Each structure stands twice: as structure tokens, then as C-alpha cells.
Image (cartoon, rainbow, N blue to C red; front, top):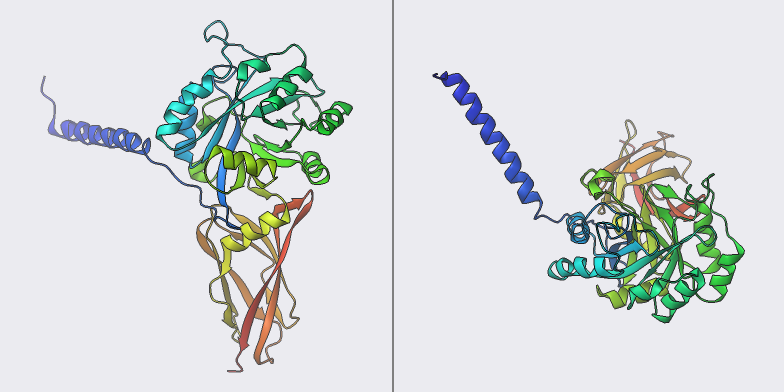
Length: 385
């Protein structure tokens, strides 16, 4: 049988296309896409996920896959936190607490991505599920009584945080509740932080508790499946991250920062944290390109605002000058310049004057239902043409 030239050409082009796609995919496996958020206050702003599962408990991937995923996504530090008590793969993978971290660290060391040793103490509510990270002897946490498990984690110098306090598996209505057992472990110094966000969920009650009780805010993926089945980072859909303001990129510096509550939550398009941290992040990321604005009598002009981060900001804007008007809302796209229209309400005014814009970043929360508010100073010229 002879093939027609046209068919051969089509087959050859198709083969080249498929080969190019495969080659491109293979090249992408070797590429890291850093998450751009400027360092602030003299600290390194590290992107971390401290709640990750593997096949050594109820996850679906081998431990070093978690390192590959994190490296490609631009993360700086991860913690493997397989369950102590829940081992559905025990018939196929031996229960050996801490082994998943050992496996992951081999690749993490080569990629300069620290992997912190952790476990999830998995009990009914109360107290619920708690992660202990920076463990030195993970198997010792296998205790019949949850108090003994936490006491052992404390003995090892672990950082302990309460996971997904409003998880519907334990709180059917999705509302986080504080129990006497949480008072107990807080008073004993056994509770150091809470997940304000987990997976796609945000817990305003936990956010409030962190502020009221001096606990560290965390945000983690709690990932079980391959990460790309849950999130699309190349489309701006990042896994929940704990942003850690650390003195350097070592596990010791991360541990110190967590103890000192130097964290900010980045989850589901929200930036959540104390004003002392989120204000510098916002102000370092966002700037007016041309702060001297000429506003013509007719048609108006634009204020150009640059966002140098990978965080989109949703803004509500108002102008304090009654003679001028600005667009009331603006989305600052990541790594882009957006423009805000400004025009005269009164065409007869002229001269130069200062202008103050009041900005509310609605997706930046300094407390539950309390968005970040700030001001921007400009100078406008109003020619009489």
C-alpha cells in the first residue's frame, strides 16, 4: 500500500507537534516559577506549606513528589505532616513515623528546599487535629492519650498548631468552636498557632482567636492528592501559603519566626495578617508610577498604579477633594500596571493642589471583616487651557 504525500505531510507535522509538546512538558519539569512578593522589614518573606500528606498516611503521592511540586511552584519550605493514628495504606506502606520526611529531604537538600519533620495528631473534637512540626523523634508521638502525644511533642521543642478548626468533618456547620480542652493546652503552652485558612476554607473565628490570644496565624494546603488536581498556580490559583518573615532561609530561622508570630496568611486571593506586616507588604508591592498628575478640563486622565507582586489587590478608592472624582473600584493585576481614571467635577478650577486618595484593600484583612485602609498622597495640576 502506498500513502499519499498529503497524508505523509499531515502525519509528519502531527508527530512534530506531539514531540514538541512532550519536549516542552519535560523542560517545564525542570523549571521553577518563583512567587513574587517583596521582602519587607529586613526579613526574607518565605512561602511555606506546613500541612502536607503522602502515602505514608492517607496521601496519594510518594514523599519526594511533594518536594518536586513545591520547588516548581516557588515554595521555600515545606513540612511533611502525615497522620499518627490514621494509616489507611498500612497494608502496602509500613507505618514508620518520620520516614516520609527522610525520603523527601534527600531531594529537598539537592534543591535547597528545607523539609521540616512533622506529624498530625488526629483525634476527635475536642481537641481535634493538631500538627506538631520540628520534631526530633517522630515515633515517640504514638501515644494512646492525646495529652501524652502533645506533651511528647513539647518535650521535643515542637511548634504545635490546631488544624482546620471549622472543618465540616468535625464541625458540620463549618463554624470553628473553642473548647475547654483548648484553654487547657493554651495555658500549658502546648498550643502555638491555628490554621486561619486550610485548603479553600477561611475561618474568621480562628483569625480572631489568633489576635486575641497571641497565637501564630497559619495557612496550609492539607494536600492529599497531586497538587495540580487541586490548584493551578500558573493561573494564579496558588495553594494556601503561610508567609514567614524569617531572618534567613534555614529551618531554625523559620522556627524562630513562627514562635514570634511573624507570619501572614495568603489564601484564596486574600492576604490576612497583622497590620505591622500586611501594610509593608502592600506598600512595598504597590506604587504610583507618576505621582504628579495633570487633569485636563475635559475627558480626565489616569493614575497609573504598579503591582510588583503576584498578589492581586481589590481596591475601593475615594477622593478627598470635592472638585475631583476617581473610579470607585480597581483591581491591581499581578505583575502589571493598572490605571485609575480621574476627572474634574468642576471644570472651572485651576492651579496645583495636593490630592489624597483613601484606599481600602478589600482582600487584605487585618481582622475578621476589617479590610486594610491606607492613603496615597499625589499632586495634581489643573490647567485652565
